[in-house]
Every structure is written in structure tokens, then in C-alpha cells.
Length: 164
Picture 1 (spheres, rainbow, N blue to C red):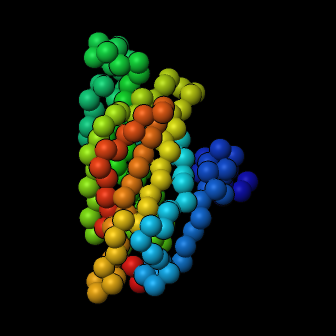
Picture 2: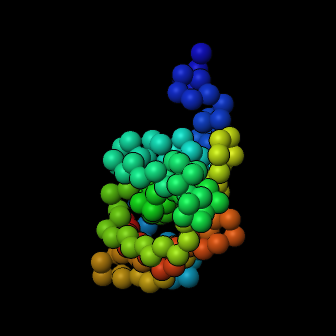
Picture 3: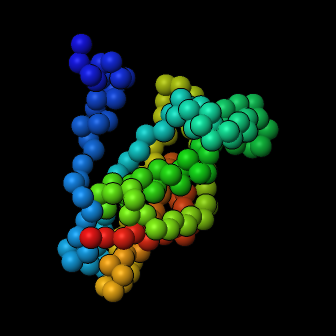
């Protein structure tokens, strides 16, 4: 049995193979204002919401009970806002190459991520662009965008990161 089989099977292995791993932080001198981060689509399922609820302590039934979501006029349960923000922050950290490089992240939410019943999954499409750079501090501000179901999830989202 391989390590992948012990820790989640072929599905997890497929997700891991799609990730790009950087060694060390991205170099400031190799980045310019206007550079685009490579787009990424993150798949979100009900099990992800359950795990996040358990870790965060946010057990609001809006995130797991379809009847509650329907009473609020929604087609499905919604992903936690902080979960979605974390997905966006992780996207930037992967691009930088070091989660310790994150100095600040700010997100304004415009639409929820609706997560359909198992086995279906929601798709969150992430993009980013270098908005500004500070050569003295060797930091950049990334403007983030997230969409799901054709709707913008983030209205105004930025992340400030320290580069090498």
C-alpha cells in the first residue's frame, strides 16, 4: 500500500499532483506590477464544510442543513466565509512559496459559495494580479478574485506578502 492510499486514496492523490510546490519565497525582483498569478480552481464539498465547522467551532446550520438554507431563500448550504477567505489566502501563499510571507489579507464578500449535496462539489475559481509593489520593503499587494457558480465571491480582496 502506498502512502497516498493510506491517506485518502486516488482522489486525494490527483489533487496533490496538480499542486505546484515552490522551494523558498518568490523573489521580489522577478515580480512586476500587473503580473497575473496562475488561475486555480478549488473544489469544495460538504465534507470540507463539516471539517471546517469542527475545527473553527462555527456550527451554524446554514453550513450543513439544506432546510435552514431553503428557509433563508438559498438553493443550498453555503461555505463559511472564513473558509473561503482561507482558500484565497492559501492560493496566494502557494504562489509566494511560504505561508509565513503573508502580512495581511482583507476580503469583502459579495456572494456566498453554494455547496451542493454529496457527491457534487462547488467550484471556486481563483485569480490574482500584482496590484502594487514596495521595493524598499520588498512587499507586493495582490488583488484577489474568486468566483463560484458564475458569481463574484470576493468584492474587494487584497493580500500583502513579503517576498525574498
